[in-house]
Image 1 (cartoon, one colour):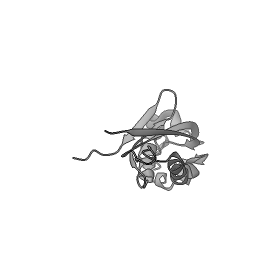
Image 2 (cartoon, rainbow, N blue to C red):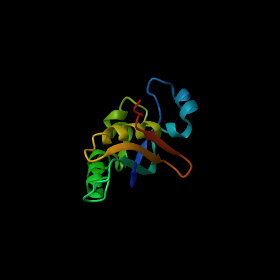
Image 3 (cartoon, rainbow, N blue to C red):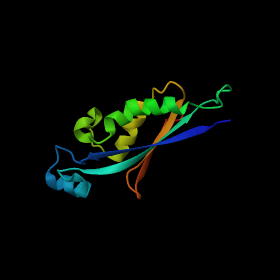
Image 4 (cartoon, helix red, strand yellow):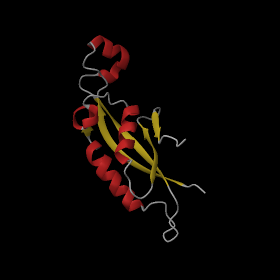
Length: 138
């Protein structure tokens, strides 16, 4: 039997999609209004999936308080109200697309000691959501 626990979190943050080595015209052509030099923000919805055996004593895959504390420390404390391009070290050299935000958050959460982080899903807008899943074991 395999069970997954999905937990939802929210954080507002801003970013600018651009590459410094490209011209303003190329950035505008590729990233459109998201290349705005003053940035733009979103109210992100983050979902974290964990899997693992159900503890027979507690009946849980992971204690929600443990997961919440871990996500708070590893993700929310850094991302909440952040300008990701400057305040999140991983995005100083990497374009903070939501695809990359998913990947970075997954990597930050990979060390959760109580269960396996199966994946993360981020809703950027009502129309856009992105998911990063753990690589499959061969």
